[in-house]
Image (tube, rainbow, N blue to C red; front, side):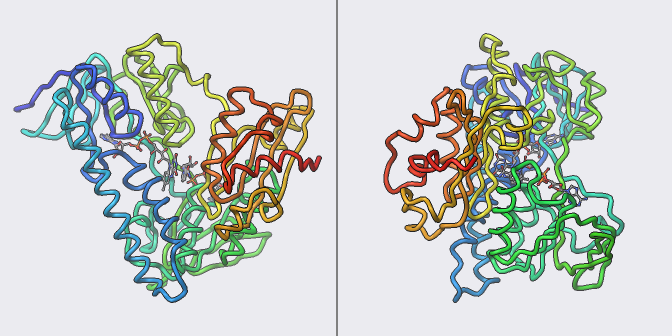
Length: 460
Ligand SMILES: Cc1cc2nc3c(=O)[nH]c(=O)nc-3n(C[C@H](O)[C@H](O)[C@H](O)COP(=O)(O)OP(=O)(O)OC[C@H]3O[C@@H](n4cnc5c(N)ncnc54)[C@H](O)[C@@H]3O)c2cc1C
Ligand SMILES: NC(=O)c1ccc[n+]([C@@H]2O[C@H](COP(=O)([O-])OP(=O)(O)OC[C@H]3O[C@@H](n4cnc5c(N)ncnc54)[C@H](O)[C@@H]3O)[C@@H](O)[C@H]2O)c1
């Protein structure tokens, strides 16, 4: 068998954010790098191809639809815009790495041969790459719940398909009201689809405070989305043009029709075909790769970055994983996952919900002496930007330590929250007090200047 055997200083399996960041740093330093990506449609990984970027562009387009626009035509035009951007980003990701003298991108599914060698391709096309350092950055994939008839349903769609289809479904049923489910629900409803969310928990966003979850629910229901919580999906039946989704709620058997059916009940690490056993790399019960706080696996020269290591599933966490791995490999080995403080999150509904730190409920459970400030966006006099951009829905809430005046947490359901939360998170990381944040100078008119007012609206 003719196998091409390559050697490198670093081999990266999967073109995710963390792996490509380390790959660039190695290549820049003159070290030989081979990165292996299984699909030519995925150079750059999930985020720019089928995750963050296309969904956020769809959020943007969905807000631009005018009443006079034909919904189907407008949607198809929007998806064309998304495709143009994602293919430009994909090409850029490939070229910027493969175009370096010291880096090569191989296309094909990789698996381990031994702890230092991975292989890609079959027969005469088989290539092995041997390196002293190996990174696994293979991401995550959706979990489809074991509901009879769901997997076989011709109306089953994935989030990837919903970023690429040009066919706007009349009725979309989303199973699961987490980040992914709520974003697609919000996007598609605004494009003109009738959306129903079936969430098994008693309310949306069970990790957030009740008042915040209720505010998000109000916004989504106000846009026309049907939200059914406490719903146990029991069966999916194909009816030709649609599927009937049966569910149980409060002891009653109910159903809803779906032209498209999106399971959004979580994502699990992609490890199944990697032959981790050949490398002696251990996984946890949920399939994620076991890592220490330097992201070393059970084989210290093999690192796992991003969703595959079972940490929080966000692009900026994968990027921070790269900082830790680079520090371990080329720096002082001081940076670890436990250095992370005040990591913000944004759910890109319209308006978005950005959160950081503790919720009110968590702070009370910990017995902290807190002050809670909260104000509806429409009532924040010092923030006319909400009126200027005609998005006055939402609420801004802060949890402050009453003894130290330090900010413990925030939940910002407001236009541009994904930007404002970064200022709050930075303040939290550097012990800037609530009073200092309240009394800072901000540009006008901006959403950030809401901070001048909201800290004074103490509700408890
Ligand atoms: C619809 C959606 C929207 C999202 N929106 C956001 C958002 O707004 N903000 C945010 O921060 N996060 C968002 N996320 C989460 C974010 O996309 C992920 O957390 C992030 O992309 C994970 O990156 P990663 O580095 O783990 O790897 P990924 O970017 O997932 O890359 C892994 C790569 O490995 C490849 N691969 C897998 N197996 C093999 C193999 N055996 N051989 C070779 N290659 C392989 C895959 O094809 C893939 O390209 C979203 C996710 C989805 C699905
Ligand atoms: N804006 C962003 O940053 C963004 C956007 C999309 C996805 N993501 C990432 O992708 C991850 C995966 O997203 P996700 O929404 O699939 O997972 P998730 O864990 O965020 O939410 C899953 C939801 O499904 C519900 N659920 C579980 N089983 C169910 C069932 N059988 N029937 C009905 N409901 C059920 C859960 O109660 C939960 O509300 C997110 O956690 C996030 O890390 C991030």
